[in-house]
Image (tube, rainbow, N blue to C red):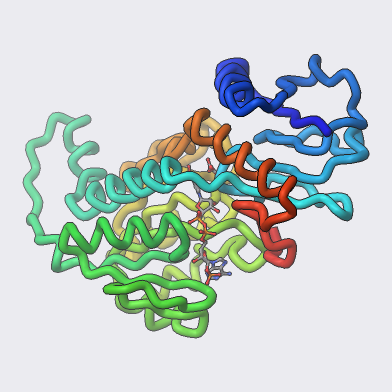
Length: 302
Ligand code: NDP
Ligand code: OXD
């Protein structure tokens, strides 16, 4: 049995220390793979050719998402990193994005570039209805914080699982959820049912002049539809942390659109120490024959 981490050297050094302190051996980088057949656990962001590891049992994404992983050979479990630090980082980015759009920051940034002093009406948070698509670990945390700031928050999820204090809409309630949403936040995983979900049809169901905060995955958003919705006034502004492709090419029109603010997929970056502890917990659970923390449902359609 061997645990292999494929990542950059700084993360490798921290994982090695955390594993060493727990009495576990860790191989870091392909140059340490003395016996590929011994590798049972593999942690990475960009997956290698898995056929090189015939006895692989667990593939661990060092991030929260797993949509970039290839189809798995039979008998291999897919695990994502679940860590409070990731949830808090993305929550912070989403709160920043929501406040930026609520307080018209794209328009102020544009005015500032032109040296224009241009005051706009100021509204209370309580006058905006925020709607969060994806009420999982991160969505629930964001909902709680945004509600605490005074926004009227609702959430939408497949199951419609109740969240105390938050108005929740299930899968069938999407239209009603969109109709009451002034600032739409996407925190959905990328699956076959969420690919392209942020499209012209969906934008048409939002109130005129709504805003979009997107931290899910780039392939959920139709960029041409976004631009059309902005031109039509259906949407007033957007804040994106994820795009398709990534990196977004330098000549993509979205970069120059003053109504869109883009950050380069930096809402979260897994803290290496937290990531290593999660990996250790996965290893311990696997040895004990317990459910792996962060285990991904193979039916989810990633
Ligand atoms: P969770 O798995 O905890 O939550 C996912 C939520 O999405 C659940 O509420 C789930 O509903 C809902 N959902 C899934 N599929 C559908 C669907 N087809 N229709 C409606 N709702 C659906 O995930 P996290 O909160 O941990 O993370 C969410 C995503 O955030 C990640 O997958 C990743 O894409 C993104 N992310 C982005 C980062 C960044 O840096 N930009 C960093 C980290 C994460 P239910 O529970 O009812 O099934
Ligand atoms: C992740 C991400 O999935 O960085 O952790 O998006």
